Image 1 (cartoon, helix red, strand yellow):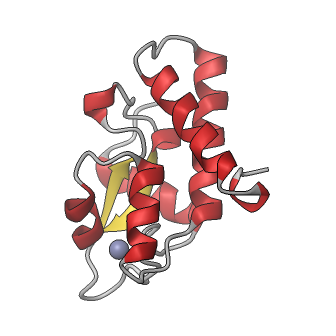
Image 2 (tube, helix red, strand yellow):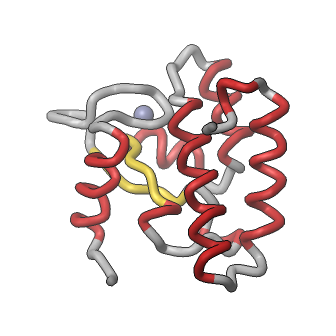
Image 3 (tube, protein in one colour):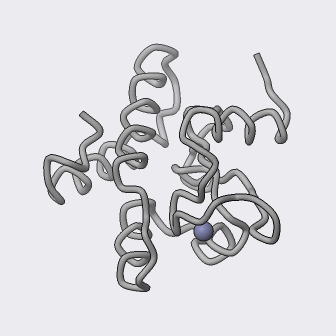
Length: 128
Ligand SMILES: [Zn+2]
């Protein structure tokens, strides 16, 4: 079932909580909520809820097409509070969705590399 953008944002906030994955700010009032693709579309990431997270407009724009784990590390350097556990859960959930539905030949190796990089950061990050 295809959800429109507003419905996907609501679903992502319901799944993960109403905060930005990258800076932790609550997505209300002046902090404009957006959804973004964890695996960027230019890397073959599908427009599935499993590949989308809620982020504030600032973080979404600042990240651009940067890989998610690389961007997580950049957020930490900037003194923000990225939600590493959420990123691990979403990446693992996307891998499971791709395994179930098939396809996504471009996204798979990119996603696998991101999962490996996240695991190297420590057991708390692996979404287990
Ligand atoms: Zn943010």
